[in-house]
Structures are given as C-alpha cells and as structure tokens.
Length: 179
Length: 226
Image (tube, rainbow over all chains, first blue to last red):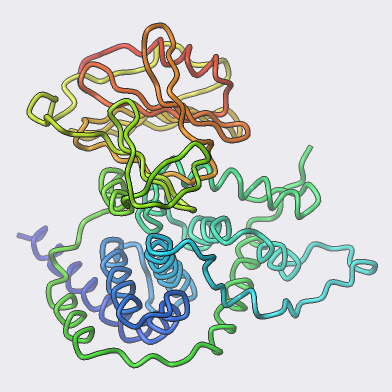
C-alpha cells in the first residue's frame, strides 16, 4: 500500500514537473524548432515529439527552471527538429549560432591561467553534436542510455561521440583533458 | 602526461557556454502555436502516466529506430534518394548525420523471440576489462574498457535489432572471415562489425584493428541465460 502511495505521489510530482516544463519552455521550443525547420506544422510536430521524449526521462530532471533542465529540454528539441529536417532535405541546417559572432576575446599574450570562460570558448568551437554530448553528460549528469534516449541514437554512438569530444577538446585546449 | 581540468571548473564552463547560447535565443522570432497543437499538448499532459518509465537500453534503441528513413546506400554512402538497400539480410538507411541498420524480418516466426542463450566472447585483447553488463529478454550488452578505449559487444533478437550510429563510419562492406559473413564499417581508429548467427544479431564496435575484431568475433560462444 505504501509503495503504491509513493509511486502515485512520485507520479503526481512528475506530472507537475512536466506541466511546468511545458509552461516555461514551449514558446522557446516552438520558436527554435521553427528557426530550424522553417515550417509551422513541422515545428509543432517536432516540439510535440520532443515533449514525448522529455516525458520518458522526466524523473531525471530537477527544478523546471534550472539551467540543467533548460539545457536538456533544448538539446532534445534541437536534435528532434534536426532529425526531422535531415529526413526531408539535403540542405545544411541553418544554425542560429553561426550568425552570432563570438564576443569573447582572449588576450592570449597575457592569459596564463585556464579559466571557465576560456574553456567555455573552446567548448563553443566544438561541433554541435560533441557539445550536446558533453552538456548532457557533465552538466545534466545523464548516463549513456539516457543520453542515447534524448538524442535518438545508440549507446555505441554516444560513447563514440564522447570519445571524439574528449579528443577534440583536448586538441583545442593544448593537451589538457577533462572529465 | 595530460593535465586534467578541475571538474568544478569544467562544469562552470559548461554553464557559461549554455547561458551564452540561450542569450542568443533572444533573437528568435515569437511563434504562436495553432489550436490543434495546444489541444495535442493538452492531451499529452493529461495522459502522462502512460509514458512514465525509466529509459532502458531497449527503449533507447526503439527511439533510435524511428530514425529509419527510405534512403539508398551507394558506394559513396552519401546519397539520399528514397530507396533502402539490403546487405546480408540487413536494411541500411543513411542520412547525412546518422545511419540506421535493421534486420530484414521477413519470417519473424522462425527466429527466437527472446535470448535463449547468452553469447560471450571467450577472447578479449589484453588490458581490456569488463566494466558493464546489461541485458533483458531481447538484448544484451558487454562493455569492455582499457583506458579511454572500449569494445562494445551486443547480442539481439532479430526483431529487436536496430542500430543508429553516426554516419562518419565508412560505407558498409561485406567481409567474410572463417566462413562467417559480416557487415564491416570503419572510422579512423574504430571498427564496427554486424553479423547474424544462430538466430540472433550481433554488433561489436571497438578501438582495435580489424584482425583483433575478427579474432574476438570468432571466439564468441553460447552460454546459459543468466
């Protein structure tokens, strides 16, 4: 009886969490999906599909307004929209980020200490699929199976991307590793 | 020896990166959803309990399986024409980002529906240790690790098998080793083998050369279900 009550309470908490995520992020998700897909119907489909994926891992998410939750939600949305786009077109996906110049300048001749800002700049230089893996693994703390579910790829692909992201980031940071 | 970043600093850098990324989203145009989208989401919110379960390896594969598209695989592996080609009884669908391999289940009644035996490599290269083993009734995975390198061995029922991987791998080729036929794909320092034997599908990916991969594949033996 207690187990049933606890599972119901858990279920109620998750329902509440999901509703808050919908209220907090659906507008942003729709805008971003439209930015990628350039089609209203597809943008709505992608957003709905992303919410279904998010629902399957809802118990892994904490406070709906945290940066971790926002990262997770937007990565799932972007991957869902891009998969949809790739299935329909051969054209390169429009990247909002590509149009915004990197405003962080690095005074290389005076910088001697590795700061979070510098590492963030290096992360921004990685290909998007490697950035997503790193964010999901180290910021959101997801395991390989959960990352695979969020991105719609196999666990083998998750591990491979993680391996490659380590190599690339190590190159960018002059031989310094992470994680 | 490589220096390693402090973990706290690394997580902070990820937060900085994500906050910057989200600041850029302020430039996105507002989107007014349609009535049908609002109704659809309303329905999803009300029927949430149907979706609450932990993501398992099997579920992750099923999500991956929805990526299957009708695409042709050419020698260059870069075509996106709407035809799917079969190699050794497998269908391979290719996009510019992801490839999906599935088994051609024309006669599902003739295959085991569950894993009635657990197959395991009896040879693993020196230095690799079994780090993780997971299984359910239709799939099993053994994950061996040596430093940053790994060998991932998986066994599936034919109906369960669906594998989505990055399309950076080479075009699949048919290879025969010791009388067994494989689909082989390579990528820089990785080799992937997919093959069908004794009613099951096997997939193995690893950071060893082809000869070692085939040696491991040849050593696979049946054992009891745990």
